[in-house]
Image 1 (cartoon, rainbow, N blue to C red):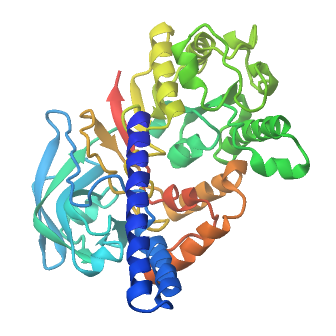
Image 2: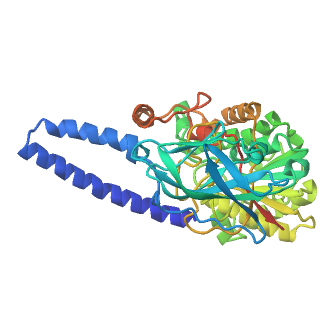
Length: 464
């Protein structure tokens, strides 16, 4: 998936360059044959239009259907919208996770404003110009739906045909022993703070320091390597301290100290130590001194795949999780996320303790950098699945307003999510707020404050 995203990004940039050249040619012709003063005016208007409506990284057509398949035996029910109320044909039973498939079609305003579907008071947004099958998340609204009182209305789009409801019944995984695997500091909070903060017993395992891209720390007078070492120490500290805000004690938090974006190289040469790209370090023990237990990698500190797998196997034996939360290897394209889950699966084979369930999450997508779309606090519709995914069940627990606020504050504690926006990004937000009707939360400027602090968290469920 990481390779696919890079291919899509290169194609997007190539097409954008071609469009820009054609646009400049047309503006130049307008200046020659109509009036010279049109050139600067059209350049400014073209830039504003690009920032308002064409700056999103959307690597598929809004007319593409989302292609989801679910395991055999998944309960499906027909749904109609009658006078603004959803009417379901059949019994929901004890299902908590409810996903509604419907064909959405943008109206003319929906080509310039984000189409919205309101389920009760919950807003879920979709791509401008949408004209295809999409999946709404009705989790948490089961009682109202069963009574026939759940309202549904649209803005800038309309529903076509009839809906199909998919219903999943799960135990509350927060009541089981839980381990969250985070390739980087903040991944656990982005994906699963609501879950782990109410878990009966949770542990957090962070795989890497996250030391790269430390330019802002060079303002302190540090060279590139020293800045990377400082950033690695700070993010390692974040990974151990932030979970306490969610009720997870430091004795159940582990930082393994491997190096950012080096997990794939470690996988390719399992016995070789792969040093940091930027900090100059090659001993993972520099950030392990606060860990609550000794691990196999502490013997020599070598940043190798074999040490990573052995560390994870030892942690499985120590914490004995029934459920492990880890990145979705087919959906989340980040190279460290894919490799981290692969290392976990190898560790499960080595460990004497076998968890029962994987809960898979996606903090990044190959196809759409804005998902979940819409403002903070809204629901989480299913992400684009243009290429079919494995047929997993889904589980989508609901976060109340207090839990969302706590999750936002957990993100505030992450050093990598702080810092001012660049001037271009700030101007883009002003333009999109005025022309496209978009909004961002007051809790933080990083895009993850909008994307991650939501009414739902979303996990794909795989049985082991």
